[in-house]
Amino acid sequence: MSRSMVMLGAVWMLAAAGLGAISLISVEQEIALGREANAQVQREVPSLQERTVLGYVRDIGARLVARSQGEAYPYSFHVADYRELNAFALPGGPVWIHRGLLEAATRESQVAAVLAHEIAHISERHAADQASKSLIANLGLGLLGAILGNGTSATTTRMAAGLLANGVFLKFSRDDEREADRVGMALMARAGWDSRGMIELLEILEREAARNPGQVATFLSTHPSPEDRIARLRASDGHGGTRDSGRFRDVRARLRRLPPASSMSRN
Ligand SMILES: [Zn+2]
Image (cartoon, rainbow, N blue to C red; front, side, top):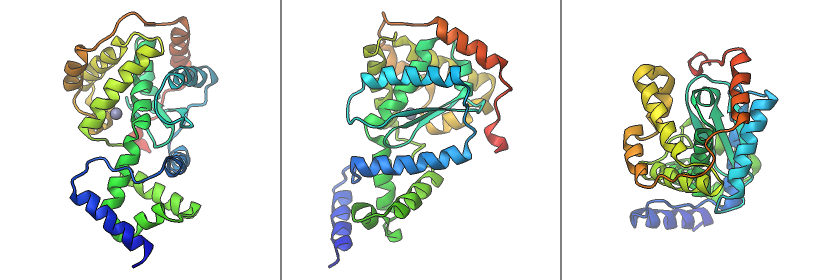
């Protein structure tokens, strides 16, 4: 029996045993997959390069990463020049926040909340779990043997493209979302922000969903309802950290002077 067939059998046994989140991907493979997926996203998504805004997002991200738990992933932070309110994480480090979400936030702690939630998806290896499950479902494509065995960089690129095209990294389970909320909220508090920012942000998304559903359609299709998330977080909200900053207000003023963001639907 070939090596990949042995592995195939092992995976079926794990799957049959009903184990939920099976990460068959090593941290190194996860980082390589995320790097490839991010290169593709950078080719397809207009990224905002304005230095004040990008520097600000990267600094908030770095403060959170310094207090995050889990593997020392090579985290990176990017701003998509889209007006829709959304954010997403790729395996092994890349985090994207849409400009629309930065513009909708009214306090710095809300921006920290978005980034902390996405960092938690990465540190808890949700994307690696998603990739493992997808690969199990696609055994016919022979991807699993490749990723477990001697996958070349061309294989990694192909797999990253396939997983990305199928939205594997962009939609997590409800349990993963709850965990990212919980872990993210604790993280932002450790890093010095008032964790009520997480709830405030969800309230903004809820209001926006009622007022202008098109702007949050992608977000709502990939996350549990804000109402459900708020109810769960209320019990654990923490006070006392930073809520706002002059730098955040400068960033908002800067964003207002830039040409308007593009719409996802026109890409
Ligand atoms: Zn999420």
